[in-house]
Length: 50
Ligand SMILES: [Zn+2]
Ligand SMILES: [Zn+2]
Image (cartoon, rainbow, N blue to C red):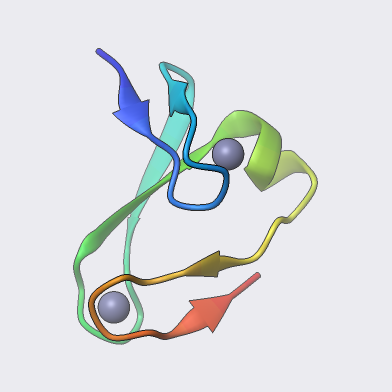
């Protein structure tokens, strides 16, 4: 199953999902972005984090 990484926008099958600390929406981040600690930004509430 492919999902879009919230940080880089690429489709990936190696991702991690976690709830947004602000609104609990599930955010998807690819392995690469997680490894290099790319920041993410929630589309829904605008919160961002490492
Ligand atoms: Zn990514
Ligand atoms: Zn959010």
